[in-house]
Image (tube, rainbow over all chains, first blue to last red; front, side, top):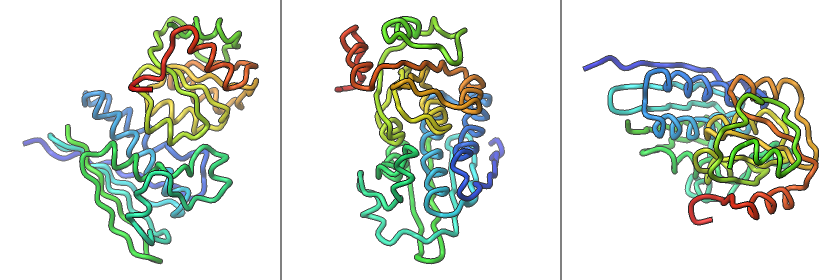
Length: 140
Length: 116
C-alpha cells in the first residue's frame, strides 16, 4: 500500500486575478503523476469552482489535496460567513454573489452544482459566522 | 475543423499560440459565464467569449479547451496572453459579434457537443 500524497494551498483573499492558481498547480501535478485524464479533469474543475467560491464569498482559505491509490480528496476550509441554506445554495442558478462578480464571469449559481457534478462524493459542513468546509472526493 | 479553419472563417487575428493552429477542434461553446462553460463543455472545444480576464484562460485550462476566440474585437492584456501561452492555448480575436461568430462556425459544421 503506497503512501498518501498531501498538497496544501493557501487561497489569497479578494485576489480574483490569481484565483485558480492552486487548481492549476494540482492539475499539472496530477498529470505528471500519470493519473487518468478524465480524473484529472474532474478534480481540476471541482477544485477550481471551489477556489473561486472561496475568493468570492469567504475571504480565501486553505485547500488540502490528498492523493491515495484509489481516490483524490479535496478539503476546502474557509472562515467565511457560512452558508445559510445549503439545499438552496445547491440549486442551479441560485447565487448570492454580488453583481461585480458576474461581470468577471462567475456568480451564475453553478459553482456548488458543478462541484457536486464533477466529484464522486461531496459533503459540506457549514456554520453561520464561523465558516465552511467542503470535502470532495474523486475516485481514480 | 482545425484552429486555423476557425481563424480564417472568423477573419481572426492570432494573439497567442500560432504554433498550435493545426489542432483539431470537435465542438464549440459561446459564453461569458465561466461556470456555464465548466458545466457543459466537452473535449477539444473552442470557446467564444467576450470575457477578457485571466479566468477565461484558467477556465480553458481546466477544461482542456484548445482555443479561445475573443469576440467584438476584444484584446486581453499581456499577462492574460502570457498565461495562455504557458498553457499552450491558442488565443484569437475577431471583430465579429458573438452571435455572428457562433453562427458562422455552426454553418460550417461545428456543433455544441452532447445534445446541443
